[in-house]
Length: 341
Ligand code: 13P
Image 1 (spheres, rainbow, N blue to C red):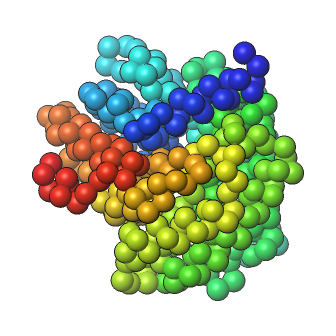
Image 2 (image 1 turned 90 degrees about the vertical axis):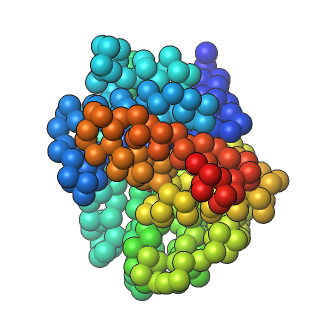
């Protein structure tokens, strides 16, 4: 298959009806922080046990087309010795891989960050592909203050994100392009809108400059929300309206799918907001779906608590979240369904 045919085949699978993507690609530092908050020790073995629990949840494959892994997980095995990527493939779920190396301050743009990891990426992708990865993820972050992100920050991050996407496509790997406008701060929803518009506009200009095939990528943006320290929370209808407005203005219809990150929203909030978008904009030009980490995992991680005897309860909690978001992806979720569970 040519690269283009490869990319199209992977995307076609990623956008299957009723399905979204699980992000289970927390770096060791990030998952250690999440575990620590629940008094769970973070070792290679506890991380393996936890991810095995998620990946072997019976029935979850009905709602997941892919799972983004961290490098460590690519080489780990389930209890029966099956490599974890192979466990996914057997369930009909595609393995993906986080390929960025986190952020560093951007010189010349005080307060802004830029993501590292482009050097040698082409070579790394060959290794990941040989281990089963069909798509990749790279995240740029944009903190909001009165001065940030700066114009330089917006341009530099867009260029890096687009270069990553071009390198992935050259390797026959579908890039998930993730520009995350952070929820931290006391800014208004209008300010988040303004930043999101500038960021997305720059990202799509850079994707075009780098000749990225829009049909062979997935966009993973943040929703347009008021800052975490700016109560009250916006209603799902307000979030859906602002988010779809900015996406319609910035994202070409050739992009097949938009899979949101949850970005610090509560699990139910992330589901309600996704549902509102699909109820209000059933004819959006792209699939409007999910690629959450925390909003899919938090209840399961809490139920597990690092204890074998809690695996079944954790899997039930995980199943509930993927199912609820599958319904939200079709605009068919109601709050009553949460209470019924
Ligand atoms: P959250 O859904 O927890 O924001 O994580 C998504 C993600 O993949 C961040 O890169």
